[in-house]
Amino acid sequence: MLFWIFMTASSIALFPVAVVIWALTAPFDRRKVVLHQFTCFWGSLYTWLNPAWPVKLVGRDKIRRDEAYVMVANHLSLLDIIVLFRLFRHYKWVSKIENFRIPCVGWNMSLNGYIRLKRGDRASVVEMLKACERTLEAGSSIMMFPEGTRSPTGRMRDFKPGAFEIAIKTGRPILPIAIQGTSNALPKHGLVLQGRHPIRITVLDEVPAESFRGLTAEQLTSSVREIIAKHLADAEAVAKPS
Image (cartoon, rainbow, N blue to C red):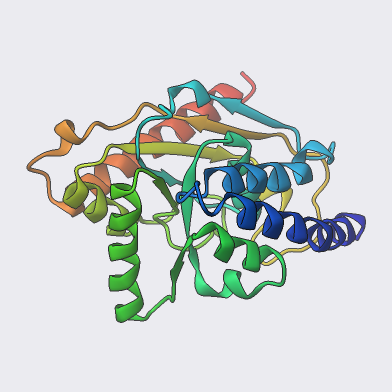
């Protein structure tokens, strides 16, 4: 209860700050880099100030600041969005349209120019793909969950090919990211924090565009999913007591 009260109160307090930053930086910061960094700070508050969710970041130095990536991560929990802000790297979220309607939080997403998607609407999917292409051409990375929705079991679902179609079409590298621990901290369909659960975010090696030339979107989708799945399996094996 205290967490959700804090999240609500902080969102009400921080959204006006976001509006001021947006207004002051709009004339010279077309990609909204400064506003996104503030949003990273905003999102990071919820793990920094919560001892139940210690977050460990691994491989953040692999993210080249001068590169526009197609970033893809497995999706376990609502917390995934919050903990990925801990990367403090510039990207635009691809998110379901319902999130943009959340007071303060969703309004800030709109200010940032994050990309909307209406699930099950083909026209929205086409517009999302075009928006992603424009974003990458402008020099900003995009962040997507290829599973499309959170896993209810903690196990990865099949990946959808949209992110990989974008990577092939634009010739941008793919940056796989593996998330662990968030499904235990806040399961899908749950609003009750589940005690202390360490969370780990691992940035894996980028997949250069040259390495997937000639592949179909389906082949690339399967290949990147396997990269993340193998890392998660290896990490789980190491974590098990002997």
